[in-house]
Figure 1 (cartoon, one colour):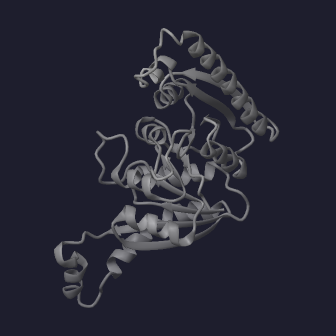
Figure 2 (cartoon, rainbow, N blue to C red):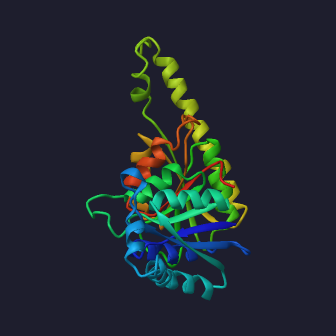
Amino acid sequence: MKVLLAVDGSQYSDAAATTLLALQMPRGTQITVATVVPEHTFLGGITLERFRHLHAAGQGRKPQEEAAAELLAGPVRLLREAGIDVETAVLFGQPAEEIVRLANRTKDDLVVVGAKGVSDSSRFPLGSVAQKVMRYAGTSVLLVREKTKRLRRLLFAVDGSKYSDETARFLLRLPLPHHTRVVLATSLESHVAALVKMPTLDLAANQVIIEELQAAEEEAARGLIRKTQDQFRSKGYETETLVLKGQPAAEIIGVANTVNPDLIAVGAKGLSGIDAFLLGSVAQRVARFARYSVLIVNAQSR
C-alpha cells in the first residue's frame, strides 16, 4: 500500500502520524511524508518567492527548505522507528492543490491529513485544506481529528453501494488490528420523507404499497448488514450491527456520539451518488460535522 501523509506542524498533523501507526499498515507499505510551503500567486503569475530570491543573497528557498525538513523530522522519526519505509517531500504552492497533485502523480492508495491546519479557525469543524483534499483527491482520504494510539472501535457506515463494498475491502486489506471492534450501521431514510418528494404519488391510496416497500427495505438492510458482518467475522473481528431510521448522515453522526469510535469509515458516495460528482453528500456531511476521525474510501482508489 502507498500512503501520503501531509503535515504542517499543527496538532492535527501530529495526531495524523500517530493515528496512521494505530491502523497497523500492511507489510511493505510505503509512506511519503510531505509538507507544503504555501505560496500565493498574485496577478501576472507573480509570487513572493520571486522577489525574496532577489533579496536573499543567492540563498533562494534554502531557509524554507531547512525549516520544512525540521517540521518533517518528528513524523518521519516516529514512522521509521516502527519499521516503516518512509520518503519525504517538500513542496511549494497552494497546499491542497500540491497534496492532490502529488497523490495523483505517485498513485497513492490513501492520503492522510489533519482535519485542520495551523491557520484554520477553531470555529469551523473542518479546515479549508482538508475539505479540498477530501473533495478532489482521486483516492481514499483519512481526516484525523484526534490522536489515536490504539484503534479499539470502528464505526462503518454501510449502504450497499460499490463505494461501501470498496470500504469493506479497504478495511480488510489494511488489515485492522485484531482487537478492533467493528460496529456496522446502515440507515433507512423515513419513507414518508422520501415519498413526499414524489408529488404525483397519492400516499393515502398507496398505503399498502408503502408498507410493503418499508418491510422489503428493512429486510434488505438486515441482509446487507449480515453479509458485511460475515466478511469481518470470517477474519476474526468482533462485530456489532445497527439498523437506523432517518437521514443517513445525521444518523451516522448521532450514533457515533453514542458509540464513541476511534474512527468512522464511509464510502465516498452512496447508492444515489452520481459518478460525475466528486463526493457524495453523506460523506461530506459526516466528514464535516462528526467529532471523530473519518476515513472516506473511494471506489477508484489505486
